[in-house]
Length: 295
Ligand code: ZN
Image 1 (spheres, rainbow, N blue to C red):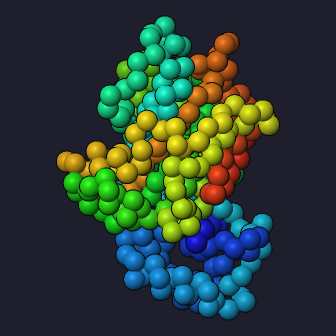
Image 2: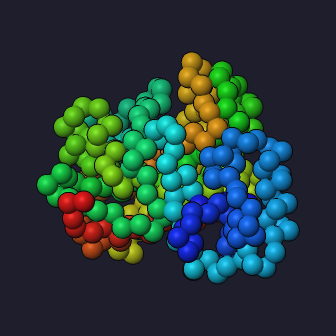
């Protein structure tokens, strides 16, 4: 399933996408769960929801272009967990930009983004140049946890995945590097476009074989495959959950490959009017315009 959260005629809906059609079961009159509620409800309810979608009457089917796609989880309960330097080429370009030797990390670099950074797959991103003049792009494959757990073994880790989505880990490099920890530079409002939907895990045969791409104004900036990750998804889930509970609806952004703006010569950053697009094969594409403002 391709599960969406969307606005339609003033209501927020949980639904699914089939081709160019959005299926919104609540249009049949039943009050439904939101995405987090669905994920928490567990596998029996997921199957029930799938049956509800399949059996939904024609009045639940509307043209996809008529709905306003929001982030599939518009307000996560916890910060988005993120991996830094999880592609060797990106680790190397980042170190080189700081004049350091390209040494690969032995352990994953983990940081988070504030829940208030989440925004929709086509939402405008407000850039306030009084706050940052170094807003940068990072296409990433994101994992949505379905069944929580602690001390999850790597060999069973993918059984805990509900689905996958696309995240643009927008990063204010000046804040990121000035404040030592990444958190502030990664957490500006609107700095986490997400979506356009969650593709459930059963539809992704191998999450370590997906192409990732990012374009700025149509120019290809990043192109890689998730097989190039240093720490694979299963291992990452095992490491994160060793002493910290993972819960249904937790989101893990699995890192970005080479081609980000700050490591270019000369460095390149997003400006008002730019359009940044991030795509993961088999999932979909985010397309966000940068607009000037102080909002
Ligand atoms: Zn990132």
